[in-house]
Image (cartoon, rainbow, N blue to C red; front, side, top):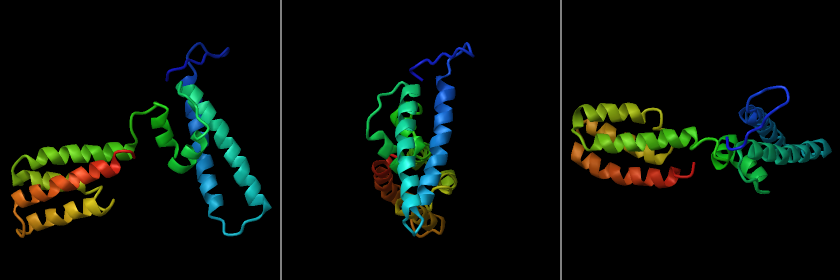
Length: 178
């Protein structure tokens, strides 16, 4: 946190605590906001609650921004609503990247290293790295499909490596901003 928040009650920096509390509020309010948006009947109560939550999100982004020592922008409310608290935390510099971004980029980095080596044991290790991501989208599914062809002897390791590098490049481009 860039800002220090000192309280009359405590002799230590409260910025992290303040940010954490506001973050919990944002998570719960986002769940409520999404749930209300799914209600099929639009009535006065729904509109009122939706508008009230929108105002709360505006103030929460101000609190979160201040606690993080970041510059607040009017568009931060919509950013929070559309992208969630984790991406807002990246924007405010509280965390460097989302968990999803870290997971995908770690896979890409590990895969590139494994592709430089021999089929065995790298095919098995790559398969283990791919397992939690293989249903994420078509690019991961394509790598998985090709890996199965290598396992079954229908594709050699060199062909797999040649086919996989462009897929990893596409994954990097697709997931660079998550």
